Image (cartoon, rainbow, N blue to C red):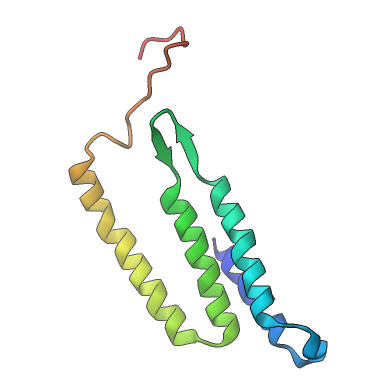
Length: 118
């Protein structure tokens, strides 16, 4: 995920460089980063029967890209604050998930077409 942040930061910073002239609009570059990273995140979401996996991963990919864009635009304190909030949220959600959704991580889905019991 660090590569996503670094790539987003580089694209954003390059959009701010005066070498490219007034033809480069950094907001258009940012919009394309959001679109491309959304596509990457969508690829990490998997549906297995009635269960959907990878939503937290997809959201994390998207947030990491936004952190890279914030750093690229020079908003370091906003990026640090957001990273701290996201990390605290992910750490705080884990015990809540374990308590209310017991056995969810190791639950094996049975396939009616499979020869294996389970």
